[in-house]
Amino acid sequence: MAMTQTSLDGRHTTRLQIRGPVLADYEGVLSRPALEFLADLARAFAPRVEAALARRRQVAVSGGRPRFLEETAAIRQGGWSVAPVPAALQDRRVEITGPPDRKMIINAMNSGARVFMADFEDSLAPTWDNVVRGQQNLREAVEGTIRHIEPGTGKIYALRAPTPALMVRPRGWHLVESHAVLGDRPMPAALFDFGLYFFHNARTLHAAGLGPYFYLPKMQSHLEARLWNDVFEHAQRALGVPHGTIKATVLIETLPAAFEMDEILYELREHSAGLNCGRWDYIFSTIKTVRDDPAWVMPDRGQVTMEQPFLRAYTQLLVKTCHRRGAHAMGGMAAQIPIKDDPAANARALEKVRADKLREVGDGHDGTWVAHPGLVATAREVFDAHMPGPNQLHVRREDVEVTEADLLQVPRGTRTEAGLRQNVSVGIQYLEAWLRGSGCVPLYDLMEDAATAEISRTQIWQWVRHRATLDDGTPVTPDLCRRVVTEEGLRLVGRIGEARFIAGKYRQACDLFAHLCLADELPDFLTGPAYEQLVADTAKS
Image (cartoon, rainbow, N blue to C red; front, side):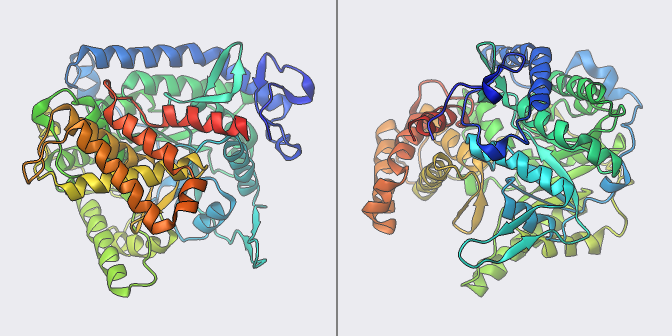
């Protein structure tokens, strides 16, 4: 359906315009009161979001390295704690994440995990339909009425008791929702996602003692955490929900945020449910932050494991910081998926998951993430064996001392042609799926989201920028990058067939990926230009 400029019933609702199709079954989500609530949030906070993004640009232009802030030393040295978390979040030993697709929601909430994080960010391609139906699906999940009937088989999927706690990750501050416009400006996507979910579900969840709970992505400073805290207080007052009802876990997935963990917890202390190691985006952010430093050129992505010293410093500092403040410290994602047709390979994959989770629980983490229901049992087994209580807040990690230099240690390893080709292949295939509306993509036995594509393209950009050499002495030049993109595209044609290649979004993905890798200035996020393409393609359909 062609996109239109409209508002419900042909009326502008406090000047918030919906520029997209409003299907009959959208109206429960895009009701007049809901749009008025969104407009209120946008009027109150959109200017502050723009100011926060301007500050990011200013910091990036200054070119300085992140540091522990002198002006907030008193917060780091103080003896404060965050408010206690509710009973539903005391035990978070295994959390599962995925987009708010109906079948995914049901399978995740039936998986045995303690928490399901419904993701509007890295694992969702934000088509208008995906975003609105995602909100619709979550509303039914909160009500306990969500069902899915599998086309073709007629198999019925429904929730089974007990269900886990539900958390929602809105999009980051840097993204907009082009289909919701106040005046002449698209609404910040973070406010759109948060606002719709909060408006429709906050009272129901609060009455049940189940939230609402959120994950907050991609923040780069405690000032951005302060902005979120102000949004929470405003929203709670507007709907008559008691102060402190919202609880939010912040993903520490940018290098600057790693230097402000205490400050971020402090700003959200009445609403904090801890911090999480968003390690894949953290690697991406690290490359982006130090992109102009030729001494900081990364090895192959596959060699940047959690054993690298800069990642060990970051994860252990997070545990120490959280537990000192009475906050949960959540581990990172296991992206492996079951390999059904190769038992030996599946066993190796599960062993990698087990080793990763053993490292996390040994470091003092209070829980961890998995991307597939088939990994819940493995992760739970490790945490059950080594964490008999609901969490490890008593593990203070006073042995950990992390300096600024520790967080900025250059990872060691080699750069190879195979690593270059892997980055190109994954980047193209992920972008192709994203442009078709799928942001959670199984590739090479891993469940990939935008973070992997971000690492892939920024790493190549960095190699090209600094004329890094591969292990055979080959310099990584723009011409080499273009040639590899072409060859990997042809390899995909050979694997999937020319007709499927042409019918899909592969040509667009190849062009966009090459542009992202070879741009004179590194684009901050691939989801920016990719979203513009997504919206343009939808408008043509």
